[in-house]
Amino acid sequence: MLSKNQLGFLYMFMSVCAFSVMDLIVKWSENYPVGEVLFFRGFFGIIPLFFLIPRKRYLDFYKTNRGFLHFRRCAAGLIAIVAIFIALRKLPLATVVSISFAAPVFTTIMSIFLLSEKVGLYRWLAVIVGFIGILIISEPGYSSLNLYYLYPIIFCFGLSYVAITIKQLSSSEPVWLISFYFSLSIMFISFFTITTGWIMPSIKDLFLLSLLGILGGLANLWLTQSYKFSDVSLVTPLKYLALVFAIFFGYVIWDEVPSSKTLIGSLLVIISSIIIFRREISLKKEVSIPRHE
Image (cartoon, helix red, strand yellow):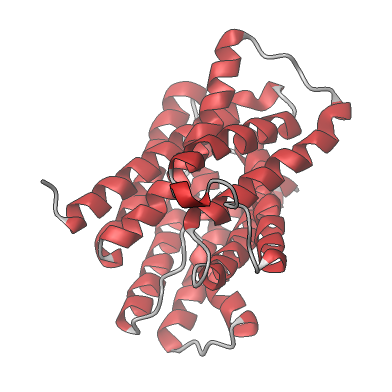
C-alpha cells in the first residue's frame, strides 16, 4: 500500500509523462489544422471526467454559480493552449518546454495586480532571473525575427491567469467541473475553424489524435491529485523531467539538438521557478499550478 506522498509522487510522474506524450503528438500533427487538433483535445478530454462525477450529480453536474469566472478561466486557457500548440509545431521541443517553465514567474507578477499580493525580495529576484533565462533562450529568435518565440511566452501569460482563476474556483468548484468547462470550450471554439479545411485522419492518425485528448484530460486530473495527496515540495521538482523527455524525444524523432543558450536559459528559468515555489511554501501559500491545459 502506497503512502500519500508516494501516491502524490506517482500521480505527478504520470502527469508529466502524459503532458510530454501530448506535446509529441501536437508537434507530430503539424499537417492537421490547429482547430482540428483542438477538437480532439476538447472532445476526448471530456471522457475521463465522467468517471469522476458523483452519481448524485449525473443529472445536474454542469450547474455552477460562478459562470463568469469559468468563462475567464476558459478564455485564458484557450489563448494558452492555442499558443503552445503553434509553438510546439514551429520551435524545437526543448525550447518550448524550457520557456513554459517560466509560467510561475508571470503568475507572481499577475498576482500583484489581480490578487493584491505582496511580493518580497526573494520572489522579485526570482522574477528577474526567470526573465534573463527567457531572453537567453529566445535571443536567437529575436535576432532572426522569428516571432514564434513569442508564442510560448503568450502561453505563460495565459497559464498564469489560468492558475489564478483556478485558485479562485477551487474554493467552491470540483476539479472535474473546472476541467469539463475548459474541454467543452475547446471543442466549441474548434467548430469555428471547420471552414479552414479539416483533414479526414487515417485510422492511425485518428488513434493518435484521440489519445492526445485523453492524455490532456488525464494529465490535468493527475496533476491535481498529486497536489491533493502529497507535499508540494516533494512532487513539484518532478515536473522538470519534462525537459529531459523533450531533449531526448526532440533528438531521437526530429534530430533537434538544444543549443548551449537553450540549456543555460532553461537552467535559469528552472532556478527561478524553484525559488518561487520554495518561497510560497515557506509562506504557506497555495502554490501556483505549473501546467493546466
